[in-house]
Amino acid sequence: MSIGVGTTLAFLFSKLPLKPIRTVCEAADKIADGDYNVRINLKGPAEFIQLAESFNHMAEELGSVEMLRSDFVNNFSHEFKTPIVSVRGFAKMLKRDDLTDEERNEYLDTIITESERLAELSTNILNLTKIEQQTILTDKKQFNVSEQIRLVIAMLSGKFDFDCGEIYLTGNEEMLKQVWINLLDNAIKFSPISGTITIKLHRTIKSVIITVSNEGNALTEESARHIFDKFYQADKSHAASGYSLGLAIAKQIIELHGGTITAKGIEDSKIVFHIEIPSIA
Image (tube, rainbow, N blue to C red; front, side, top):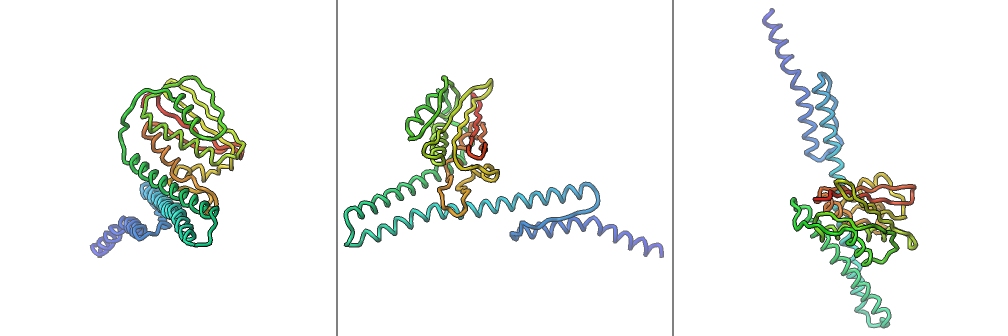
């Protein structure tokens, strides 16, 4: 009798620790099949509860990554398809014999513009891929970043407010020049025609801090979180131009220099980018 009871109790107790493991395994299988909404609720020791919380956090993060991947594919397809369809459509129209010289030139200009857009997009993708694969910062030298920003301002057509003394930092001069071009071009794109883009630059003991602010559409918390994602568009209908790859490239370059870049909205009408780069990258 006692032997039978002991055997039964031993069997039951041996099964108890395996139940949470089976629960986790079953949930992991569901995630492997693409179900990122699965969650587990384990009872018992603190370790089981912590395991459940960690597993659920992992599932949530994987779901977010999958959503971003899906958005990236959709936006990538849209960014390429739109100019291709435009070029094809206007090329077909050019075959008509009843076009005026004005119409023909207009269609040719559109084809040229869309072709340049495709070429720029392809170049940005190659640049971003190259930067993402780069782990070591090369061609570092000390240079005048104030003068570099002034030269970039002279290249672009916009209303800028920038008055700063001479500040130097050590880094890859060409890569950082691309950062300022991308940031300021983006600020111009999302500013009203009469809006002013304000650039501030100062140095602390260990770093150089740059802020770029422009008046424009309000930046929501969600947009601020994803504004540096590849092909991110706050307008899901694609009715307006997206942030495309410029900010994603800028973020990769800043981080390669050991720095940080963030964006936030102020007073519902101003977007501020805050960049901090170590004086010696």
